[in-house]
Every structure is written in structure tokens, then in C-alpha cells.
Image (cartoon, rainbow over all chains, first blue to last red; front, side, top):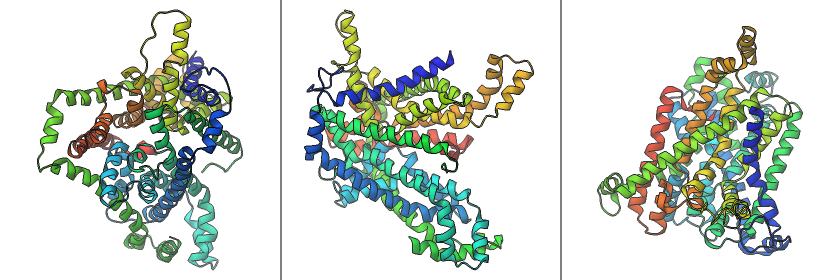
Length: 255
Length: 293
């Protein structure tokens, strides 16, 4: 009985998402399901349209840069936070977590005014700065958790065997922490790639990201190409989740 | 970064054997970049909103008075609160059985359910909102079936409180399930076996043992979903109606249509305070780290 309920809820979660994939092969000029006919027309439209390809490129560029920014901030901070005691530690933690506390629409409004004042609205740099900071909490949580599980004796052993601090860090510390760091980086990338609200407010026309373009195409024109973009994104997620299930079968892959 | 890291490592390494000395060495170099970035790129922008809310167009608290006295705006606040509560309760009712089955079964059932939740979780808000636009739309399957059965004129599904609530439940349900699951999987199954061996029927052992132990997950998931819902932007705007606005719709309208920076900022501050109060209460009793751990 409860099994049936659980599967019905799972169906409620999955079915609306899967319905989009046949939509992407549709011939209809608006959102119609089931589709009246099937063709690859909207795929051709997507892959030949700068209106869609430019935001796609922007999204990848912004997500990659903001992931790098997030990791540059988070990795040193996690080492400082986990391995040292200092005054104001809980205040520092609160600061690192603050982007999770503030609703995104508030942050979006704040960036819109603040970045506008320094003329960074509608630029790639502006979106990267905002996204890079917004992804800090998630990456910080993951890296700190990894670091807390790290056995400091490994470093002491390396040092007492004559390795210098540099060598110890690059040959012992970093390799052990690598899986956790990669998960943190992936989360940071996806946080930027999927982020919509801040991007809608600040990315303007030239730096428009994919979620912003999708939002506008729904609001303004009901462009069916959005079904193609959505299907590609869903396929990527399906692939990633399947991959993680397969990898999880092997031991020592989950941080 | 590498330079900074390694530059401070000798200090950490040298201090390691003597724990007393470890507390003395303050790792400012390690903490400085993140602190600077968060202050300049987060605290200051939010402070700017606070400032605007009382200085634009002139120094006063008139915006706040308006929010809490004009019926149009108090209705927005009330509507945001009730909608968030509805979504939270719906997510809990739908999510609990899924998380329960995921915990109690260790075979393919658990894997399949977890995959469904994960796919949904990682698919962006916009994509899932778009899916509901199709499903509830005039040319969608629901209206189609309704017409095929000859049930009269098609009901208005889209751009109502119903559609925006449904969309938010769908989007936030994975958060609830994962929050419940992460607490439930830590419940020792031996406790349930012990209850059974002492003569408790399945219903009783669930009620007396499993349910109380899963309550922290219920609180976590509830707080998580409720606070996200308070400030939810995409779905209310794309699926909802301006007649039953939520706070984020009001902010968007004030900026997009009226360029009323001061008032929009004041509404944003009210939203921020409301969210912070909920989280502060949670922090008082449970500790915030538990929420995201």
C-alpha cells in the first residue's frame, strides 16, 4: 500500500519532466501536448539560432568562471575554518552561510541596484561575481565536511618522513581531498548553471544566461524551442544521475 | 591560491604537535579572500537594499508603514504566508511515504525512487515550471482529457493560485524528501526489530518508534521548504496570478513596471526579516548547521 503511494509520488515527480521530451520533437507552433506531429524542426532552430546559442555559451562560460571563483574563495577558507580556532569563528560561519539565508529574490534586487551603481549590470563579470559568491555556502559545506574527515596523521607521517610542507600538501593532502573538492566544484558549477532569479535581474541582454533566456521566452513569446533546450538539459541530468548510480556500485567513490 | 595555502601550511604544521599553540595562530591569510568577497559582494549589496528602503526617495519609514497598512499589501503578506504553509504541508504529506520507503527498502525500489528524486532535484526550476505550463495549458493533456470526456467548458487551470501552488509543490518536494531521508536513514533498524520482538505490531512500532525519531527530518524539511517558498520567484510569476500575489511578485512588479526602488527594497527587507526570523527560531532550538548538514 505505502509502496504504491511512494511510486505514485515518484511518478508525480518524474512524469511532468519526461513529458517535455516528446514536446521537443513537436511540429506545433505553441505549447501543445500531445504533439500533432513530429519533426526535428525545433532542434534545427535551436542549433542555428544565435538567440539561443549565445545564452547557452554564456551559461557555460559564467558557470565555469564562477565555479573557479567559488573554489578560490572556499578552499583556503575551509582550511582556515576547520584547522584553526579563532575569535569570531561562528560569525565567520554565519557570513559564509549568509547567501543561503537570504532569499534569492532579495539578493537579485540587491545586485541589480549595487552592480548598476558600478556599471557591472549586464556584463559577464557581474554575473560571475554574483554567482561565485552565491555558491559559496554549498561548496563550503562540502569542503569542510571533507576536511573534517581528513586524518591529519597522514600529513604528520609525510612531514616526519622528510617531506616539506609544499610536497606534503601536493602529494598527500590534495590527492586525499580531491573527490570532495570535485563534488564541491560540481555543485558550484550547477548552482550557477541552474540559477535563474539573480540572472534574470542582472544578466541583461549581452550576458543573458540560458535560464534567463528560457524565462523570457516563456513570458514573452511562448517559443517552442524551449522544449529542445529543456530536453537537452533533462537528458544531461538523466545521464549524470545514471552515471552516479553506476559509479556508486563501486566502493570509495562517494565522499 | 596555492601560494597562500602553502605559505600558511608551515604554521599549521608546526603548530600541530602543540595543540595549545594551534589556537594562537590566526589564519587570517586563509580567511581573508572569502571574507572580503562576501562582505563586498554580499553584505554591502544587501546593506544597499536596507539603505534604499528608508532613503528612496526621501529619508522616512513611509514604505514600511504602507506595507503594513494598505490592504493590498497586507493581503500579499498573508497570501505568501498561507501559500507557503500549504506547499510545506503538501510536500510533507507527499514526501514522507517516499522517504519512508526509500529508508526501509534497500533493494532496487530504493534506488529507483532515489533516482526519480535526484533527476527532479537537479532539473532546473524553469524547466519544471515550463512542464506545468504545458500540462495545465489550454492545449495540454488535462484539458484534452476533460474535453474528450465531454465534461463541459474547460476549467481555468493555468495562472491561478492552484497552478502556482502545484508547481511549487512539485519543485520543492525533492528538497523535502532528501531532508527526511537524510534523518530517516540514520534511524537504527534494530530499534524497530526490538519493538517487533517485544510484541509491537507494525503500526505501533511505526507510531511509537520510527515516527518520533523521524521528527527532526520533518522539522528540517519543513523549515527548508517554507523559507524557500516565502521568497519563491519563478513559479509564482510564470504560473500564478497577479490577483493573488506573493511577495516576490510584488517586488518584481514594483521594479519592472514602476521602478519604485524604495518600496521594492522595503518589501525585500520585510521578506528578508521574515525568513531570518524563521531561521533564527530554528537556530535557537536546533542549530542552523543541522539544517544544511
